Amino acid sequence: MNVEVLESTPSAEMLVCVAARGDYMDAWNAEKSLEEILSTVSHDERDIERANENNQYPKMHDTTEAKLISFIEKQLSRGHYGPWEHPQITFSVEGVSRVTMAQITRHRHMTFDVQSHRYVDFSDTKAIVPTSLRDPEHFSRETGLTDLDEDELSHWRRAYKQMTAEQLEYYEDMVDAGVPKEDARFLLPLGTPVNMTFSGNARTFMHVFNLRRKASSQWEIRQLSEKLADSLKQWMPYSFGWYEDNMPHKIGP
Image 1 (cartoon, rainbow, N blue to C red):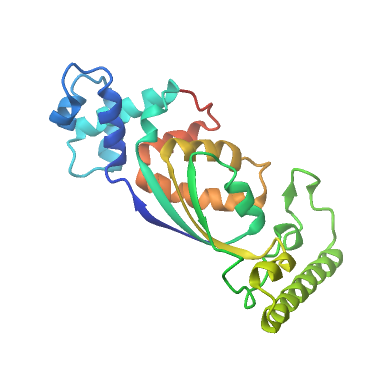
Image 2: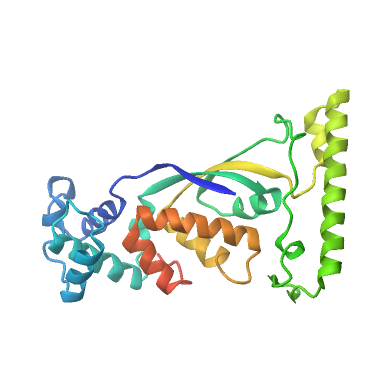
């Protein structure tokens, strides 16, 4: 599985502050600098220290960055998530199973494009092997730790690979014989990898993490969530840093 950011709102955390502070300002926020918008925000020495240590925004004055940190974390701790709907980010993901595709596309307020089984030929692919067939220490919400010895694990891993390979071979034969891909696809296993492009706002991804980074979530969507989290922390370091330390956190108004 590979995850890449295609596009994202620049200066996303600054946008959050400008939007949120606009709720309480007499002046029009579009006519004010970030320093002016955050001028009355309280902060402490620890915020200054963090701004100096992290230097996430090198072009920003340390005091302004300290106020940004303080404001962001105060709003998040209060459950004021509305301003985090303004920044948007788009991901391209390579090689997730149809199982995980079905899970992630259930989330609202996200936009998806998924590699089509109707138009793309999937003859030259292999099904993704579930972790429970590769790792005897794998934990599942349904059964707990995998209760298979190495011989049993090897047997079912071989069986899975053989059966999914046969399905894909039959699929290829059907397509080669002239069966439309839109009908031959009924034979494809759920482990068939697909590529996706999807977009969402920062608040939506916090909600995704509430559900999909939990230990009880299925292994593949947890892996996807971890990769998304790495990119999101680079994009909005203070917001997603705080959220990671405090999740799950109820997504309020």
